[in-house]
Image (cartoon, rainbow, N blue to C red; front, side, top):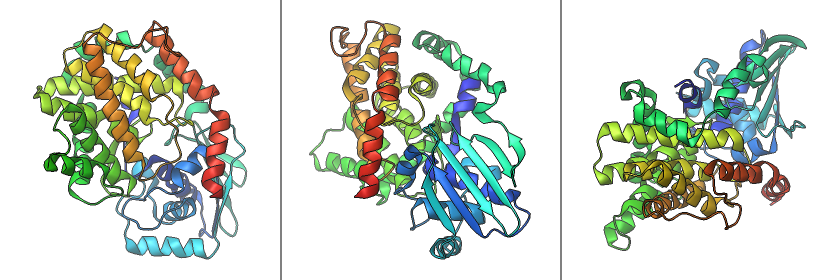
Length: 418
């Protein structure tokens, strides 16, 4: 329950620009004089995910813009909903602030994959705010070199919680999901409600590439069948369509990623509704999906050269297997199948095309579950798949953490220099 409370959070818009806006809003709040300039430094992974993605309610995009928007008008008390309620007037003022040359962007020298440093200047002061490791974890605040706050993941008080994460396993998660009082899973229920709402929004309006809406239209034309996989793909992709295009609707993020939160919940919701399962069973299944994803992400890292939605697909596949009446062995088999399928998908930043990757991973989640229910799973003789699912997860995370460092650098160069 503590892990769920910690790792599920309501987010407005893509979490990378939201985190930049949060840091900027916090820095401005600590100034005692008028803001005149902002310096932004961020890790390559943050830059590639914030560079082109839509900002809720805005037509303008870009890191400099969202930093200015957060610094001038953001509400830091709302954390990742920092930009809630802003209007066209706020957008125009933030655009002018950037056009006047008041925002400077650079790549941070930090080795952390999730790192944001904002320095806000007035005529007499400068305030530096650093976010690291988690999108809403402010680890330090300094004014004119004097420390005002130290905390976040780099504070020793958080070590016990990291140990709790390390003690997670597919077995303990499955036991928890089966035995927990469902009335205590209100946060999971809220994730279903919020994310389903934005999924329906994407199905009815023209957002981004309209991946989910197009899939649904092709079902109506008779070109696609109304099966489990197609339902999972359309609803989940539609949620991503809306979010990546700047919808003002909040979502429940999983481990700091709203897109991942969508991909963890909506394929499971779509399958559950198609099967006609009870609300209680659906909530338990989505809790399983969230926790499996958190378990893998705790080893995989929050940002990588590999697409995080692949991890969400692993959680969703486990949950879909559960909805189909699968055993713990079959649930493990579905995770093995998903890892063996989508593990090579790279992340080239947050953008409209993410909805296609969400659709792909949702489709794979259903396929992997159906194979597992039939007692078919990738064997340890194949690739980096091990006989034990936990070892397979470790292998996948090693690939994501150690095997893709050069890939990350090349992707960023391609994106920045095109």
